[in-house]
Length: 260
Ligand SMILES: [Zn+2]
Image (cartoon, rainbow, N blue to C red):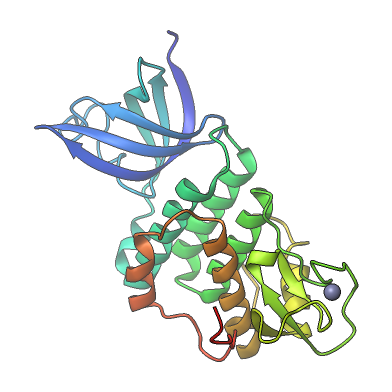
């Protein structure tokens, strides 16, 4: 099998035996892959520090029998060491990488999702941890995976909104008008928040700088996007507990009824 050379982002690295590593990485063309790196913990010549989570690398690899590809050697493009200087930035990076690994509907490569993840990690390095960065990443990832929520119109009757408020229920596909929402269904959301999120979907996928949301959009938008992400995952993300401890979601949005 001819070795391949691909640009990849390391998502996770686990020790295997004395000095090997099993590495989960996201490849621009190959999608989500798991690889076996022989002597990955010790071989400075072949791998150096390249196999750390969040690193961007140029990897030589070949398909092997079974589910693990064989990693031959790697060249470091960007270690993203800045992420390790701030706990919230580290938590956001870990969350983004785990989310990509869990939410993708298929295993093929997606240059757009690869570009989004790379730009998200780079933005955390450059701008530090920001709620806007998490929201933009979630919103764009949902869209690229085919899970874009209905925002400016009712997900049931498809009527556009004219009032100042709507309801939002991710399990129904997004926004609901007053006539279609059951009593207390989902969360209340302002037209302003829905408009802001909708405008964000029209911005370039890899642009994270220059976005500033008001307190209501931050609170409502975060709650709404968390609801969407949850509704498309099977099981909880391990990284979410740590993220919520070091960078809690803004309060004041997404008043939810107590009904099941
Ligand atoms: Zn409706």
